[in-house]
Amino acid sequence: MTGVELRIELPAYSHSFNISVPPSSTIQQVKEEISRACPGQPRIDGQRLISKGRNLADDEKITDLWKAPSDSRILHLAVHPSAWKADPPAPELSGSKPPPLNLDTSPFLSPPSTFPTFSSAIYHPRLIPGGLQLPEPPASSRTPKPVEHKPMPYIVLLHQNAISALVTGNPPPPPSGFNELRDAAKAAVNALGWEWPSILDDAYPTASSEEGEGLKYERSIVHGRPYLTLKPTPNASPTQVQLHALHVLSYTFTLLEVNVVSSNIATVTTRHIVVNGNDPLRAERLLEELGGPNPANERILQELGLRRGQNNNNNNNNNNNNLNWPGIPLRPLLMPLGMLIFRAVLLLYFVGPVRKPVVGILIFAWVLYELWQPVRNLLLERPQQQQPANNAPNQNNGNNNPVPPNHNGAPNGAANANPPANGGIFQVQQAQAPGVRVIEVHINLNSIFNYLADLNLQSEQQILDQADQAPVPEPGIGHKIASFIGLFLGSLHPALWNRRRLALRRREGPIRTEANIRQQPDPEPPAENPSEEQEQEDGSRPGEQVDNRATEMRDELRAKHARRPEWVRRYIDRVVEEDWVDDAD
View (tube, rainbow, N blue to C red):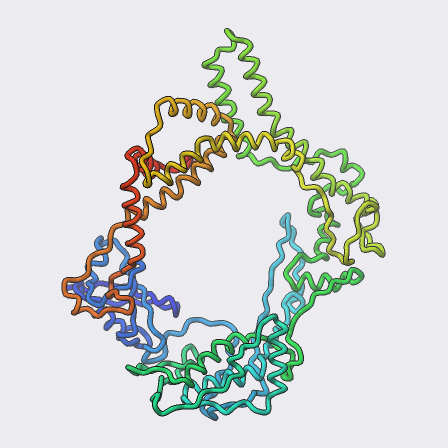
C-alpha cells in the first residue's frame, strides 16, 4: 500500500519538510516519523501537531482529518525548546548577536567593564510627489550612526546574581561596596518616571535543607544563544531562593533595556529636541534623522514649480486669474446624480406634468435645488482653500526665494499673523477650516434628517430588549401602513436614506451576533471510558475543547429567545436570513 505524503510546517524556525506514512497511521505514528525525519530530532512528548487551528490527539487517525482527496495535507508542528535532541533548524537571522553570559567561571559575578552593543539604524525613505527623482544623499548622511547600548552596571550585577541563584539554589552574597552604583541606577530609573522596585533591595532568604534541591536548570544553546532549560523533575517545587531570584529577574529584564551614557551612569540617555529658528541647517538635519521631509528638497521642488498646494505656473501675477478647480471624484458625483434622475423620471411618469403643470414646475424646481447643492458647497469651500495659497506670493515678494524670518519668528509680509510662542521654523498658520459655514447653515436641516432617520427605532429597540420579560402585542395594520408610507417618502432623500441605513445596521448587528451564538452546535459529550484518557490541567482531554462559560451563555440566549413573542422571533429570523441593508454599497 502506498504511503500518504504529509507536509510538516515548522513556523517557529521557518522550516518545512515532507514525510510519508501509511494511510491508517495515527498522530502518534506521525510524531515518531517526524522525530526521525526532522532536523534536530525532537522528542515525541515535546511535539504538538495542529490542523485547522485544533490540537490533534495522539489517537486520531490521519484519514479522519482530510475527507476529500484534493485537500492539502499540511500539519503545523510546534516543538518545546527543551524537546530538541540536537540543534534545531536554524532560521536566517540578521543583525549582531550579543555575547553570551558565561556562568561557568564564577557563580556570582561583578559588574562588567564592557557592554554588548546593539545596532539600531533605521532609514526612512522619502516620497517625492510628481515622479520627480532627486539625487540620493550619500550612505553616510542618510544612515544614522549605530547607537551603542550600555545597560546599568548595578542592574547587570543583580541580573547575573539572580541567574546564578536560580541555577545553583544558593543565595548570593549581598552586593556590598556598590552604593554609588545603586544610587546612580535608582536616580536613572526615577528620571524615567518609574518607581524603584523594592525587591531589588531585599536580601535573599537563607537556603533550607527541608525545602529540598528545588528546580533543576541546565544551560542549553538555542540559535547560538545561551538559555536555561528546566529539567523534568517530578514533584519538584522551587525553593524560596529561586522564587526570590525569579521575582528579581522579572524586573531586571526590563531595566536592562535602559541605556546609559557611560559606566558611571551619571545620566540616562534622553534626547531633548530643541529647535532654533536661526539655525535652519540644524533643523534640516534633525528632520532628516527623524524621517520627515527634507527642507532642502522642498526648496528644489519650489524652484521647479512643484510646491505643494500650488500649480506649475511660475508667474505669480497671473495666479489669481487662473481657475484651478480641484479634481472632482466621479463616484460621489455620479451616484447621487443618477439617483436624482431616476426619482425625477419616476415622479414625472406618475404625475403627468402636461395635465398638471403646477406639479411639473415644483418637480423641476426640486431638481434644480438638488443640482445646486454640490455647486453651492464647492463655491463656499473654495475661497477658504485658496486663501493660504493666495497669500504665498505676497509673502515671497513675487519671487521664488525664501524670505528669512524677522526677529519675532514670523515671515515677512504677514502683518496680521500672530507670532509663535517659541521661535522656530515650525509655524502653523491658523485658518478657518473649509466647510465651516456650510455646516453652520445646515445644522437645522441635519437635525430634521436625524429625527426622521431614527423614526420608531427607539421604541422598537425597547420592544426587542424587553420582549422576553413581558408579552408585547404586535403592532396593528394601521401602524404598519403609516410607518411604511412615512419611511417610503422620507427615504427618497439620499441623506435621510443614508442615516436610516446606518441606524438599521447598528440595530441588526447585535441581533446577528446573538443569533450566531445561539446557532453554534453544542460540544460533543466526553468519552465513555474517561479513565483511559489523560486529563489536562483545565479538565479537558487531548483533541477536545471545553468552554463551560460559552455553553452557559448559549443556553441563556436560547432560553431568552424562546420567551419572546412569535412576531418578534419572525423578525429576528428575517434579519438573520437576509443580507445587510444595501449590502452592495
